Image (cartoon, rainbow, N blue to C red):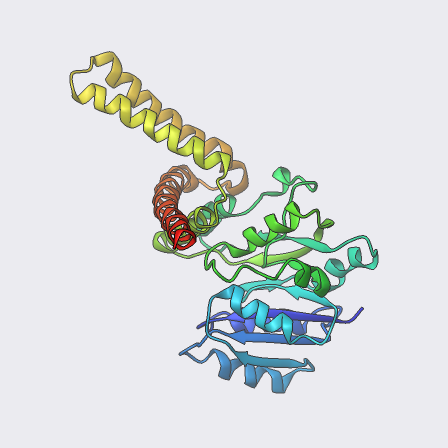
Length: 320
């Protein structure tokens, strides 16, 4: 089974070498590696070229300015093989990743393989962030688990049949692509043994931007998750009660608001503490819950207005 690993990069000089080392260290080496640079202004491309001279990897480097979908589609089009492997710079492939993620494709009935991913966290902040960003092992439903670009294998024919990654979206585009695969009944196999290690953002700003981009991308593509609806309802309810108290509410209402806040904090700790198990998580988990809430609310609102503008523009075009 001949394979091509496709990866997009942009200013990844801090992470690209460890990613490439994990590719070179595979028990089954990809037949070729295609790296599409989106226009890096740091030493990313230079590091890739230097690394390719030291290892027995067939690395082909291209430059294609655009978002990750543009880069992935560009790289897949230029691949020489029928099986496409996808991962991202900033990740580390477990040694048997290629071997494991290609096993299900030995069956002609399988179109796509969704590999798994785990957090590679060092600090208390990063460890607390992982359960908010990834699907934890006890929450995995292999029947509904969708492939993400950090750990995916797909037949080139399936990618072509589904018109590739959606290039109009710059955020969370792999989720949009995965939903398209699901919608058109592609046969997706989940492979928990095909593990990629994901390196979390190191700062609150980085975490905020990650949650913001996910929510923005979902809404721009018209994908509305049920948990986002409940998130908005929670805050609308809370702000409504707060408004009632400010405009003449009773002491009982104030106590209810305070108790509700504490319940929310305790809930944030309870649902994720078992994954972190360090005392700092008692503070960090509620902080990250509220940070994620506001990032998702802001991203969803901006994405909704983008979606609305796009819809109005299409309507205007059709009238003209």
